[in-house]
Picture (cartoon, rainbow over the protein chains, first blue to last red):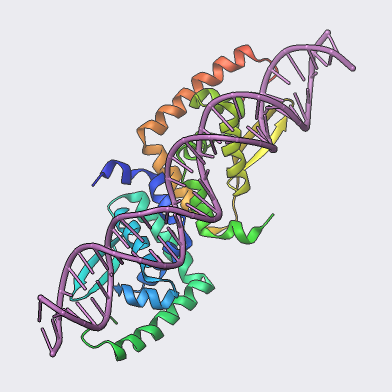
Length: 125
Length: 125
DNA sequence: AATACATATACGGATTTCCGTATATGTGTC
DNA sequence: GACACATATACGGAAATCCGTATATGTATT
């Protein structure tokens, strides 16, 4: 893990400079979420979601937890003050943005559907 | 001017995702600065500086003012709350970072040298 | 108008990023 | 261990980004 590189603001901003990654962060803002929920909610192919999640993880913005077959992602508590500051501002923006709000709503619906078809998966909220 | 595109956070972050542009913003944080000062301080070829300044201007982060042969750039007052928030955090980070501090110091020295060799140019600060 | 200087843009090439598809890995079930 | 499912990675190819060099534009000076 190269902490030096990750501490660079340019690297942080590069990570945030992609719409798909911002949409993922928006969904994760509600709490821990598994990949299939993210994939279904964003209507994006699964490898694309995994790739962007890996990027967010490399940047230290999210953490992952395995539970059986499923991987659950969540926002990470980042130590760097700039990162925390920027993410706080981003979170505020997401709460106001219409598209982001819509996708968070859609996530809740999708979550219910998945729970019906895939038993054994732990529900979060 | 496509306000729609510039309002997208992803566009903001893409703009900030380049080390040279961050170095430019750092120098401009001290006040209005002309291109030749920026070029000399960063020891970067002039077209590169101009290109990145153009990018920052497109994103609405800086404004330009012509004075004779010289162009002076400065931070712009941006209306978007997210932009203001992120830039405030960035400014704080820059004040603490060693490299950025060094370059701001170097800028003051370079500024004096230029003033001696190029008459007619208005001094700032 | 010819020249000099400051800055901006055009252009081609190298590098990076992003994507879709295919495939590999990891985990539970039979 | 064979299979099914969830997720991760590998592998080109398309598009975007960045750079250095060359050149264009704009402004004073003579």
